[in-house]
Length: 147
Image (cartoon, rainbow, N blue to C red):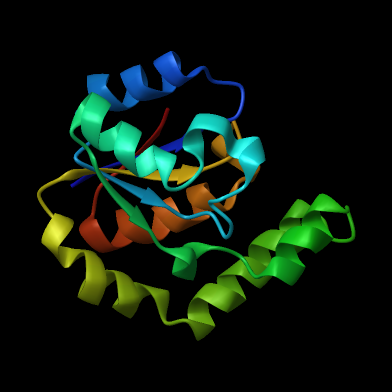
């Protein structure tokens, strides 16, 4: 398995889909809590699933199990919590959700595929998709590439 992450913010549709296609992505896993916002443009559901299949022949999965809670997301966006607190709280949430067992049970079928985790942030450094990617990387003993 090769693991990639991508954010749609500050990317044109052309750039976004070319990055996925040029990196041989087989399945995109949308880890956003809310994937239907009109602010997401080409990346809102159900449009993104159609575009991925038609433009790149990429499968789409939306899995909010990997998303932060609404409260944590709002607290971070409102600057009520720092990134460090966000990371720690997110890890606690993932632990409660038994995320490693969840990944093994639900995503083992992708072991020989190239997957990409989608969120909105343009840079992965302070985005939960980077944290989720680390779980996948540990379990499947591979590295992560941020597009």
